[in-house]
Image 1 (cartoon, rainbow, N blue to C red):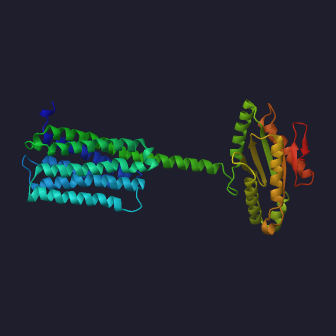
Image 2 (image 1 turned 90 degrees about the horizontal axis):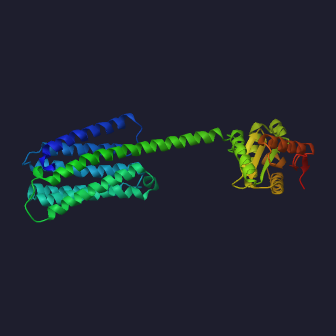
Length: 400
């Protein structure tokens, strides 16, 4: 069946397909968000398209100039593809590895000049052409895999598979050219027919893979942007801590988990003492600095698994999973002492009052919060700069 296909007609049809793919990539380039390297990918597609078009226009006995022009275009194409991949993935700090490919193409073209114009030799010309393209395409297939981002990309694995398949085909052509026997006419060769069909399919899939790579990058950036927006919406702008919205969501989830599995869960409510005096006497800038420093001091006294938030104003909350009342009270006392002995610059000494409570079996999060807040209020009534424990539902008690 394949023998009935006319090589020039097949090449002409392939040219139309390549031209269509070029148009699609050009449209993406001018109308969509693209990244470094896409221009070189478009150059790769244009070079392939022009190379196949020149091949389609060649007659049964093409001139050496047309043969050389075809080789120039089709050898430059994979070098441009690699250039684009290197830019897209940030493969190299310098351009030297990329220019190595262009240097390889230049050397191959010198051999092509010799075997086209000085000592015409179809087999030698084909070997140089095929081996060079295979080497360049294998670099495209494997070198970006050094990066985790490429290894995680289904689009790149698709592109890599296509490059390996084309390289195997090129090496097969080189091997056939080295075999003894009569020279096979390019326009009446099943090998050329298969190569053209493979090239058409591979070009479509490879171009699709490049567009997918771009879309993956766009989706990744959108996901990161959405995450950043979500974090900003849940972060207190002054202290950088989680805000009340995030804490309330976390509190509900942690209470449900503690009730389900019977694990301890404690809560610390902290309030800076006489904070209004700092704002009134030294200004809000000094007050903001105190809040930021209190946040740092509290953060230094808790574990990575604990959740610290600015509840509002000068009040902070610490959720302490897996910790019972006694341990939480000890933690609170260490935090209180640390802040009381810390130097706050021109502001002078700063103290905090802390209420501590452990969630009871069957207790709702809202009721628990109210109970711990009552312990904090009791600490204020008792003279501030102290820890008061909300011991069950009987009421707050002073920490030992």
